[in-house]
Image: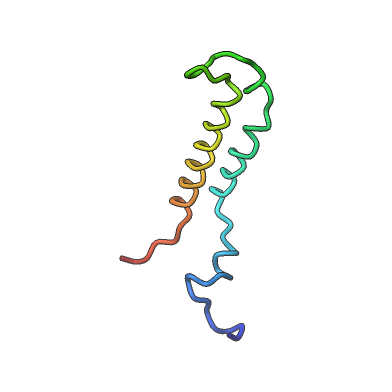
Length: 80
């Protein structure tokens, strides 16, 4: 492909240039588990599990929800 030819909409090069501000939300599931005040306690217990253990599962759900939200907000939609 030469420099004068337009890129295909689904090519890897066009996806790498996606500079959507929604991508900044992906830092939330990285930063939140690093704040020790959230998990530095024994109570409340959920089904007998201390806070640290059930919060690990909550962080996984936070990561999945955030990734899904960013994907839905940034995916390229066709003209259909």
